[in-house]
Amino acid sequence: MLKVVVFDGGYGGEFFADQLEEEVPIIEVIRVIDWRNAKQLLTSPRNARKVAQNALRPYIGKVDLIILANHLLTITSLKYFKRKYKEQKFIGLNLQSPDTFVKRDVLILTTKAVTRTINYRNFIFQIRRKSLTLALDEWPAEIDDGELTEQEIRDTLENNLIKKNIHPGEIILACSQFNDIKPILRDIFGRNLKIYDSFNTTIRNTCKILRIRGSLKKPKYKSKR
Image 1 (cartoon, rainbow, N blue to C red):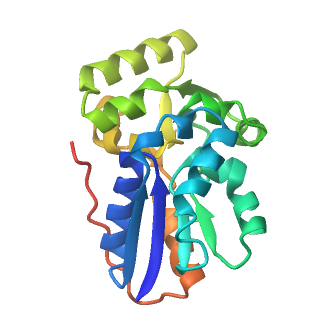
Image 2 (image 1 turned 120 degrees about the vertical axis):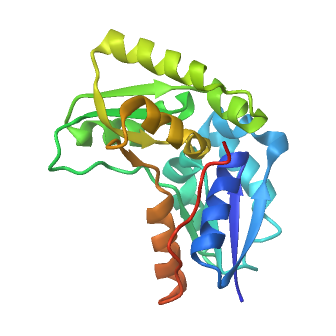
């Protein structure tokens, strides 16, 4: 059986691993969730890379694929890992670009460390439409602890959107933990809201790299809320 490691520092990695297992049941998913260093993974690319290297060292060269279920790691360190460990295949959660032919306002939910990168600034420039970035560093830990309330989500979003006169028809999730609040986001903005979360694209890329065909199940993943 093909072995795939999913690395992250919190429930975002667990959410992704759940969906991966459900959609691609013919692989063995190894969860490497570094809860102890979760905050380090959100502070800076350098710290995130160091944490990831330490946690992944026992698996490099011994599994079929390693997935970085962390947007900061992916956009700043994926190329580094590929160059340094050429014997190991890596992929990650990339920033998901919205459809170019639609001209609706875009809301991006992420963390400060992501917004400070050159890759993120280039990403925003390429969107070329009215957008608002909210760096919500306190939310991942609250989601992990089950302490983020629906009212807190509503108040934070509504207050910031009113100030910027943004009416999002699309939301980009650039933090894997935020997948847990997708049902609440649809309740706030309507069932027609389009959410880009990187999960499905990463799973398709996983199947492509591992040359898996005809073995996928229709996703049944649901939030744990």
